[in-house]
Image 1 (cartoon, one colour):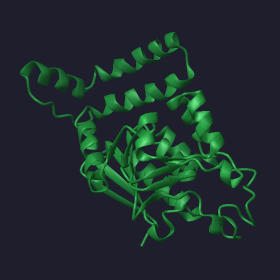
Image 2 (cartoon, one colour; image 1 turned 180 degrees about the horizontal axis):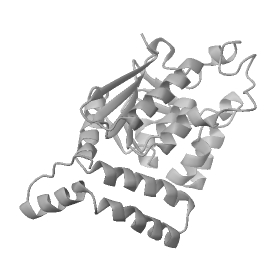
Image 3 (tube, one colour; image 1 turned 90 degrees about the vertical axis):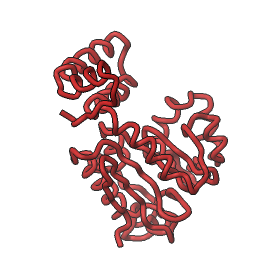
Image 4 (cartoon, one colour; image 1 turned 60 degrees about the vertical axis):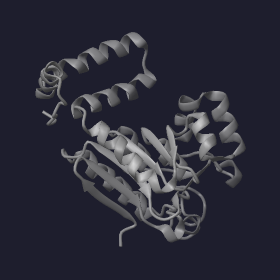
Length: 262
């Protein structure tokens, strides 16, 4: 069975890390398979929302250290990372550049790469028993897959610095208080909660949702005036779409809109 599962149900694609015996620790083949799954979802016009989760009791325990220590692993010939990396197919980059919304359903421990993967999702729903571990400095490394970029923007410099420098492990409740996750639910309710959010998003006009995500992403690195001008230009094609006419008509007719992504 594949180490990364892909399933589409209606407008929602679910990507599942499927190496439960290793707590979904990421191997080199899994990096490629995860990227392929995300690209597949991004290119599928029927998919409007993506959910990422893990099989078993963990979300993702990070890069597999046993693999990394072997000649076959992520860090070939030991723990020294390769000096050059093709980032075009690297999951954090693929995830960041997706226009479609991504929900992280954190079903258990998320550590190292697993934490960065969760942070790369747009929305995070967390099981009450899950723990989020920024344990990089306790292993002699630093967040190498996006955490140092995302965390300060997400929770502010001071709190991000305390978390990253100390390598602290957070409970689900602590993660919620910091704003790392948007809600915490009981483990048995996790996927249903994530799916409910996904369905709510999928019911909206997909072009508008994707444009909004693009604008939120570029706003992280541009000034207000520049951003307002860019957002205006992004709005022009939206108001020419069938979905805009449907949304406006549904509002006047006091009914739920039925968007087709056109």
